[in-house]
Image (cartoon, rainbow, N blue to C red; front, side, top):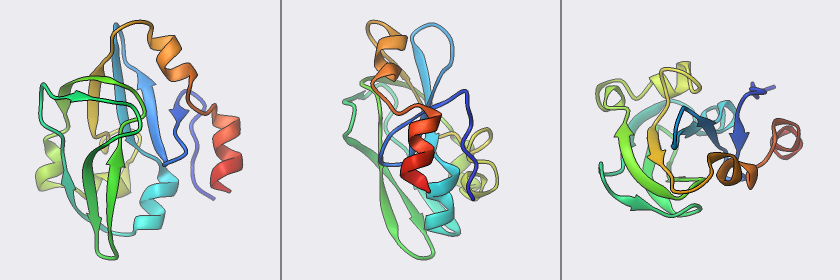
Amino acid sequence: MSEVRDNLYYSEEHEWALPAGGQIVRIGITDYAQCQLGDIVFVELPELGSTVVGGDSVGSIESVKTVSELYTPVSGKVVRVNDTLIDAPEAVNSDPYEAGWILEVEIEGSVEEAVGKLLTPERYRAVSD
């Protein structure tokens, strides 16, 4: 069974979102998603400063099995990407919720409202089981 953390919000596309202070939301893929992908060999990161819309593709993740789109669960401006994934994409496999985070988005408006549209941990567990 994959790990689902109680302090995160989730998308049906298996991304997680963490309010990271102020208007920032940190985003990555779930443990379930990294298990399904297998060994990750490349992460295409979004461009810093780009505007993203919730539900849209912002990059891709390549594993030895397949290439999968990376979606953002919230809208806003990309203010930070995890550059360490360029040389160490396997961090998404070994630690998807900490070292393997992918991007941070600065949203306009209420962070609580933005993540409130996502799945709670309980609802995500039902989707990912």
